[in-house]
Length: 100
Image 1 (cartoon, helix red, strand yellow):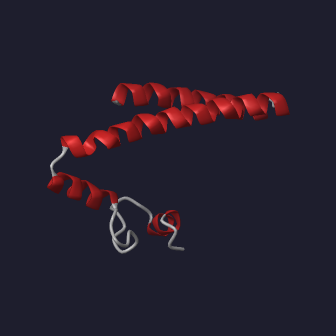
Image 2: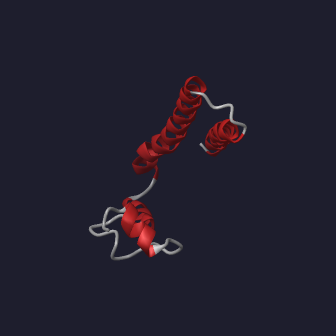
Image 3: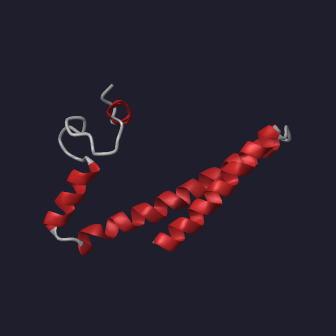
């Protein structure tokens, strides 16, 4: 998974850079904008698939207490805003969680 995710992540970054360059160089047109965005979203979709496909296998790999620990560390629970995971900005965490 790691190698696939790194490869796809690098493609995504490269495509985002191409989009940025098109605007910076003033070469962006409606036609190439659609092409650039389509490539970016296809790459983002593949990257999410790589990650989520592994998530589907997690219950077969981990024991129940490990899954519970993982969920707690990720901030999943009844109210994700009561305990903001370490390293996260509380305001952004709550906004992302739909609590503000």
